[in-house]
Image (cartoon, rainbow, N blue to C red; front, side, top):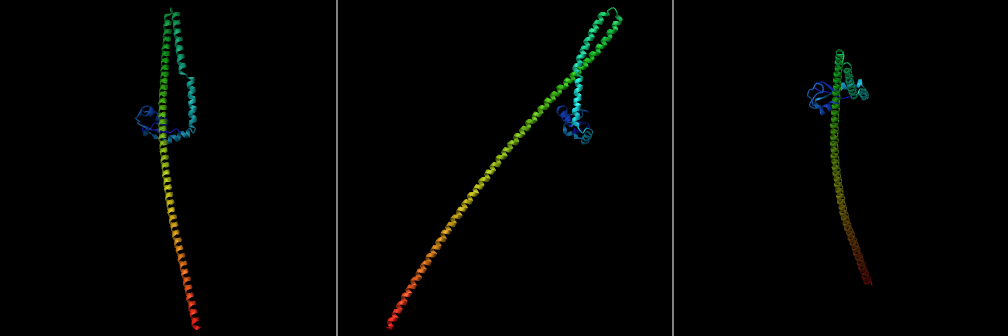
Length: 259
């Protein structure tokens, strides 16, 4: 759409045109010259946008066609050619006037009237020539102003591009710093994991050492128990042998007594 905007004076303009006028020209309305300090004083006119969209649904195509028609008219009516033709006409009138003065030296009354007409025509042509030259000058000035405005717009665009580049650089630097910080954090996490693994290994080693000590203790205890059992069994065997010997002695003594 055209994005129409209006100010306090209710004069409507295209968004691009009024922003360009406020940026490059005076801070005022181009129609009534009321002060308009910035774009904040403007308001969006959505109703007007809707009307234009209903009247001209293909606004871009209409504008391109209109520009083509204007260019054709400008080519057909070339002011430079018109000024040249006016200059040639003035030269011809001067030559005709000189010829008429030489021929009609005897006829004073008629020549004076004809000379007056020629002078009037020459004056009219001179005025038209001045008007044309002034128009050409005005158009040249307008073209120069447009060129200056285009240069200013290009400079502003370049500044905006530089600002965008600076912003991109700052964003890239910030991203790089973030990546570095994230890498540092990852390294810290890895170091912590390594420390945890080392602690786990140490705890496992301690556990294995304690288990080995306990197993050794258990083995010692079992060996001692087995030794005790063996000693007890040996003592029992000794006692049994003694008892048997004593029984045998007693039986022998009894037999001797019987005899």
